[in-house]
Length: 249
Image (cartoon, rainbow, N blue to C red; front, side, top):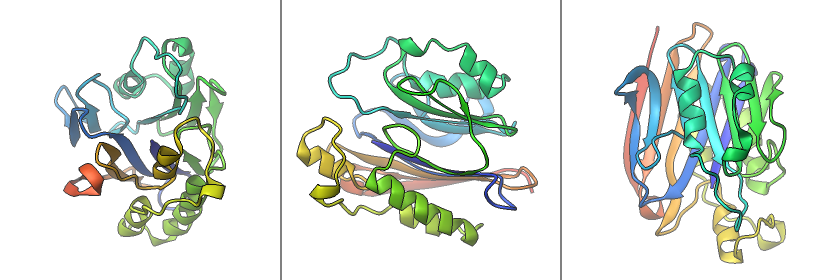
């Protein structure tokens, strides 16, 4: 489904580092990384079907990202999870105040990461509704924060090592591009058929209809300069395009 790796005040020169894969059906209409037409201070891709985003940042120091909770067979919520990130990026509320306004029951299962530059919060409507995160390195896929799924453990460990190579971006994309399938005896049991459990066990997911559509690296340095790089992909992982947006010094 998706993978997000976050380093929050874990590097002396980069208080925020995010590396993420967005996995989705290729048929779902999407706008690639760009400044948003009606809010140009916000940078990120956009879901053109429901109107939200899976990951975005703003020049005001805000960051938001969401993943689905994998729960096959559960009825869908009435609201789009992409609205959670969009509304936060467009607001001026602190993460804790914003989370206090949400109707968690109105959404399908989600994991949410929010920062206003001063604090980083994790929330989940299948777990803790609001949890302020201490400085450190975190991993998130389609279960709870830092769930011990093999791909998440591997990606988080490699991500921690790659921080020493900043500002180089390629080491992070090497991690995000790893399509190795986990052995059957290490697969989590999440309720999907075994064939899909195998496919989804890879950091970079490949298939004809569904897979990793975007790999993203976001860094914010000590001077609050922002770097956003997105690489997008089509069916079976075919590279499509890449975009880089940077601000500040």
